[in-house]
Every structure is written in C-alpha cells, then in structure tokens.
Length: 572
Image 1 (cartoon, rainbow, N blue to C red):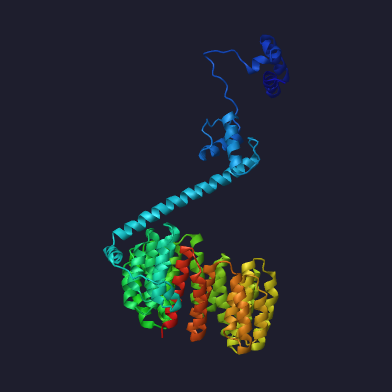
Image 2: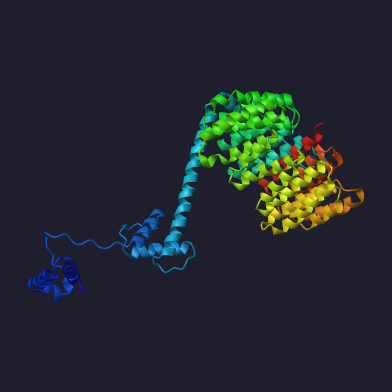
C-alpha cells in the first residue's frame, strides 16, 4: 500500500458518509492516475523550484552516538543521524580504544558505553577545573597574607643542616638526624604531588622532632599551595605536641585561610585537651572563637560549633558544651538536607557524652549514612552499658544489620562489661562476636574485626584465646600489628614465640613503608604505656627496614615517621 492509497483510505474512513468517501476516492483515482501506476514517482518526485524537498528521517540512536563521539574528538562530521563512512570510522576508533568488538555499527550497548566514558571525562574535566580554581584561590590567600609570606621567605633563605655520614643516623639515631635524612630524601623525589605529600609529612615530623626551623624550610618548598596550607596546620599541631606551644600558636597565625586556621586551632585544642594540657587547649580554643564571625560557609560555621562542644566536654565544661551544642542545632537547618548527616551524627555523639542518651538516639534515627551513623552508635552502646542500661545497649546493638558493625558493637559491649568487672557477660559478647565475624564478606573488615576481638580477649586476661584469634587473621599487616601488641603484654614465656610470629607476618607485608609505619606506631604505643624498652626494640626494627628503602618518596616518609615517633619516645 502506497502513501496515496493510505491517505485515501484515511479520508474515506473518517468522513461522516461512507458513500461520499467512496465517491471522493474514485474521483481522486481518475483525476490522478499516475500516483497508482508509478511507484517510482513517490521516492523521486518532479523537481520544482516552488516546492521544498521533504526532510530525511533522523535516527535518534545514531544522532546520540554522533554527538558523544564528537564530544570525545573522534567524529568531526555533521550531526545528522545518518550513517556515513566518517561515522563508522569514528565508531571503530572508539571500539578499538576500549578493546570492544570493532564492527563500526551503532547499537544501544555502544551508546551506553559512550555515555559512561563521556561521563567519566566530564567528571575528570570538572575535577581539573576545580583543582585549578582551588590552587588559584590558595595561592591568592598566601600572597595576601604578610605573616605567611614573611615566614616562608625567611625559612627558604635560612641555611639548613646536613649529614655528612648518613650511616651515623642509623648507628646512633636521633630525631633531628632522622629528620634531616628524611628532608634530603623528600627533596630527591620527582617534582609533583607525591613530592609535596612527602615534604608535608617531613615538615610535620620535623616540627615534632624538635627542629621547627627545618619544618618551616621544608614547608616552603611545597609547590602546591593547597598542600602548603594543610602542612602549616600539621606543623602547628606537631610543634604543640613537641612541647613548643607558643611556636604552635605562631604557626596557626601563618595559615592564610580563615576557615582552615579555625579548624586547625580547634584540632589543636582537642589534642591538647586529650593530653590533659588544659591551658593549651583553652588558648587554642579562644583563638578559634575569635575567628567564628569570619566564617562564611554554613558547613564551616556548624562544624566549628560542634568541635567547640567536643572540646568543652574534654575540658569538663558541660555548660559550655550544651551551649555550643544548642547553637549547632539551631544552625543545622541552614544546611542542605544531604549535608546534615555528618552534623547529626556529631550531635548524637555530643549528646552521648552529656549522658543524654535518648536525645542521642533521636539524632541517630535521622542519620541514614551507615559510615557516619556507626561510630556514633558504637559510642552510644558502650556509654549506655557503662551507665547501667545494658539491656537497651544490647537492643541497640541487635538493631545493627551489617555483620562488620555488629561485631564491633559486641566488642564495645564486652569492653564495657570488662570495665564494670562482669567477666562472664564480657565473654558472652566476645563469643557472639567470634560467631558473627565469620559472616563478614570484606576481607579487610573481617581482619579488623578479628583483631579487635583478639585484643578484647587479651584485655580480659584470656591470652591463649586472644592468640588463637590473632593467628587466623589473613591480612598480614593487621595480623602483624595485632601479634606485636599481644607480644608486648603477654607473660614472658609466650613473648618470644609471639614476637617471632609477628616478625614473620611483618616481613610478609610487601610494602616496606607500611612496615616502618607499623613499627613507628608501635613505638608511640609503647612510649605512652611507659615501656621504653619495648619502644626501643620497635624503633630498631623500623630503622633496619627504613635503611634498606631506596625509593626517595617512601624513604623520606619512613624516616620522618621514625623521627616523630622517636621524639615522642624521648619526651618525659
């Protein structure tokens, strides 16, 4: 049936009188006989200057494919939705680049793949643009800050110490000497973000190691202004932990970004309060309070008040904590709905610290993001158990669905029962955790859960059970760290055996820097527990591994970690 016949039937079928329709059809047939006898005339009508050529049908699928190929720079022809040699060649180029079947034909699968690749490239372009804007903004902040410029220029011009015989730093290690070697290795790393990362870590550890002038000089060599601003905050924290609190406050003043300076001051206040240094905590907090009115973003304003509430709690100032909590709560509605999750989780933790458990649970009910909700849940579970509300704490733990979090909840319950002296209940919770840990699918999460269970058994005095759990851990890094921690506290008869096993697990950990970092953390742990002999043993192990690292980037970070750990070990 041709187009003319279809039109005739349409007309005849829609006229009120079928007879009139038939009559009209016959008239058309006799008046225009060529339409029914010449099919070719339908595809090739007579040319006339007074008539417009009919538009060619556009293939929507092919048009979308051409558009995406053009966006990727593979197609340079017309976007007409018609198949052509240039379109086919562009399709083949894309298929070849992504190891797809090279047939040069359009399809729904091809369109989906093109949309995925184009989306990835849009995100990449957006990230590059954002990075460029951030770098420009950070550079402008530094240029507009006289304090920052003066400190960096003075530091860059200051001569730095060197080590003629690097081996002496390993034979007779000192924090300053290790920091110097770390600086030399970082400067030898290829220029770029990785080098800046290493320099940032070296600056922080050098400050803690007691060489603040070197810390400033190393920071001045960081190319990325964003990394530099972050490093200044780390240097301030490290200076305070190294006992040079006044220099830490000066370092805070050098941070050109008000929001970052306020955040760093509050982090410093928190660290000082956790260390029992109330005077330093209050000084850093007061500095942050002075900057509150200069904060502009709603997220920054809210986060500062939440942190102020946490610092007040650490200082035992419950009234101030309640006041800051109330201000944060009032500002919560100024945030977009999807940005409130973290704030509500923080409010829950603050309410828990204030022993307002019901209010804490109300906030938790509104937090949908599991990664944000679980830390607050675990804190609430342990606090409720310690407060004598064990049944409610257990009910809350049972409400947790993910096995990896249920295990941690049972460990928290056991920890609370150990503190309360209820060993039987603690054992019950640890047995439940041991059963539930087998249901965890993620290898790292399972290993972490097993580590926490092992350490809890050790805290309960069940050393053999703790060792058995540690030995089944499959992640070598977590297994090694757990065995080292157990070996430092078990009776002498078991200590050597566990240390041999820990050393074997450590050697199985392929990343040398990861091994050094583990030893550095163990040095810090043993130092905090007053075990100087254990700290020295771990330091010696870390130095042995660090000395053999040839890669400049990894070597600098390893030596910096050991310098900071050794400095903490030597502090009274």
